Figure 1 (spheres, rainbow, N blue to C red):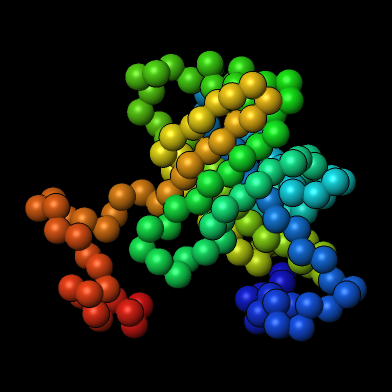
Figure 2: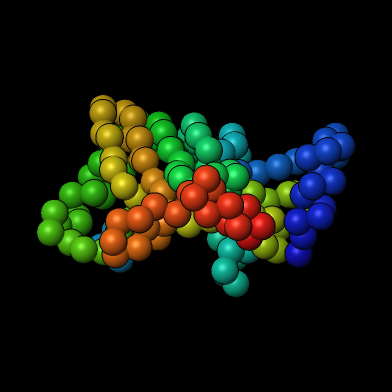
Amino acid sequence: MANYEDYKRFLSSSPEDTQRYEIVVFKHSKLSRTYYFVIDSSSLTATLEGQEITFEPASIASTNAINSNDLDQSASFTVADVFNELDDELARIPLDDTESLIVGSGIYLDSDLSAPVEYTEYDIKDIVQEKGVFTVNAGAPDLNSDQCGQVFDLDTWPMLRGL
């Protein structure tokens, strides 16, 4: 398994013989299947959560996907959905359904495809659908406020910096 130290070394030295693959996963119990995408021009076979998965190549623009340096924990994914397949899949989910659609984002190094170096799952906050384009705005569950509505930020709670 590629570890975080290998990934930091990859980012600092950018070796020519190692390639980085970014993956995006869409899942919900009402979808006909879980969608596994790799942001590349060819498919990728790798292990995720103990299962060998073939990730389909897709044209995806991800913003802030693997970035945990703030308390927002939000990301945006824009998928080229030429045949509106993801649009049609959303129709399978009733509007009153309480289960969140989940988007996962991860990074693999080609030196070790047995597990992602990083993998984060987000709840989808909203979806913008246009013909041929599917944009998902996602974020971590709202855990940064208590029942009184107090926001835990770094100015009020400086000890959070050490976590």
